[in-house]
Length: 108
Image 1 (cartoon, one colour):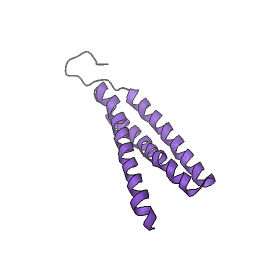
Image 2: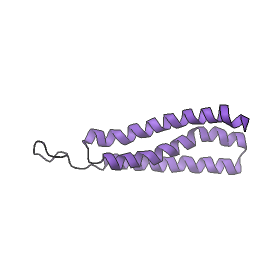
Image 3: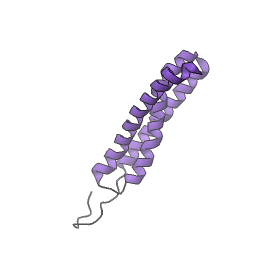
Image 4: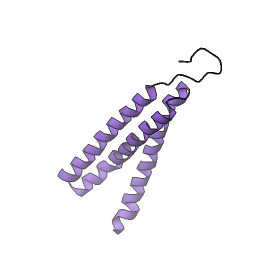
């Protein structure tokens, strides 16, 4: 995927954007499932589902943004950045949800 001349900028790749789009679709599904369970099910079921649904939605919104920013970088960066940032956002989101529902939610 290089242009052939040394020192030239690499050609933009759409692989990372596609990966970010897939994460966005999965995030929207996770958010939709969380909202359906919150409306139809009980509060404890909604809390349980939101431990994974909300971080998945956050990762789905972060990954495409990073993919569009990193699209003109080298192929490894353009593919790895959205996946890595999406996964890191999901880990941060899970930790934040656990802290929120175990420390903050009971005191409200």
